[in-house]
Length: 462
Image (cartoon, rainbow, N blue to C red; front, side, top):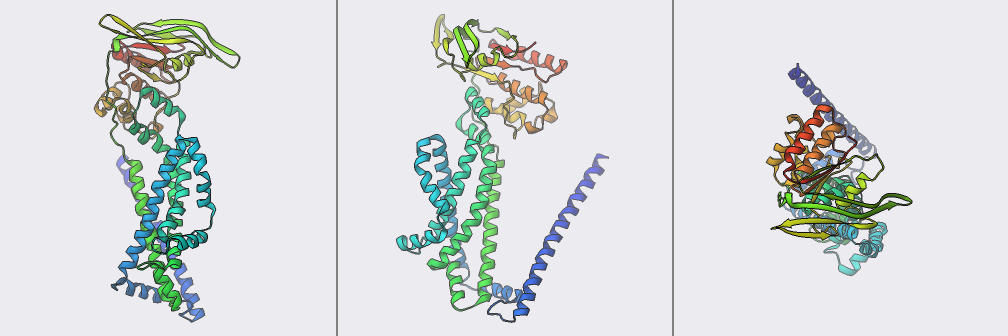
């Protein structure tokens, strides 16, 4: 039954594909017919040659020795301008996202590139630099603002909660970029690239027509205009369209491969002295506006202990865990982290030796990636991640993107991620939400087995 259904679905997909191709061919044939009728009506090849005349001229151009040099010349200039503009836009966007002053300084220049007409750029650059690198410069100035603005918007739309998660687990820069920033950039960068690619070819060829550098398609278009050779003009226009489409397909395919690539996460798991970490909360005070959550709160969490925070909702359990993780600062008091080595107590205040992992109240998973990949981010070991996830998640769910998992499954992924991070202290915020009785029992057993002398603090309603 399943096999028949699969075959039927495949036939339907093929039928849809053939229908789409046939529709596109019919549309192309319609416009060629319109072109042919207009050509017959005007009856003047100087004004409007027929499709067959333009096609024959294109064939003649392709098989002449003079065809390849202008094609490669224009492709090199426009490609160089595009890639230089893309690289500069990416770099400037990263710097602007990090340094507010830098963004304010370059904002007028970006706005000028975005709003000044291409013709103005062409004339200015032609006067300043001549025609040789005119197309490169114009393409650069057209591409730069599109890539810059799209990338900056993508960076600023990165999920702040995922960045907090990365901070707690100490994820390296490579993992943060590929699995947190990259998915956020994808829609913005794809949109910016498509816009930049189209404008790049139009403006680049226009610059070549005005500057007429040697061995360029723009030069050939200029000669066609001088000699009133419309067949040549249409043939070279077809070449531009083909080059533009192929160039765009290649760039977008490369970008698609980049976004689909899943590099190995580089954070090795170093367990350290898990059994020797104690946490002491001393005279803690925390308030939001007029609401006081803690007032002279004191607690000691000894190494190897499991502690449950069972106060009602709104009493500050999550806030306490966030302060222990270093994500928030108390208004008063201090949190002391103690390491015992060879009988000597080394107590550090201010969180400079915080070594903890955290299961947040929200799942805070990288939704585009599998459960195994989310755990691998904190272990640096794919095989270990698979083995750990198999204890709480069904085999068929291991490779699915987390966006396709149920709420209870996501909680289990978040739990395994926190427990497998190899930290000295594990903070679990409502770890059993969405789990039935059987699943919760499995989760509690897993926590006990993986405690290994570590301090575990659990906020739960019980």
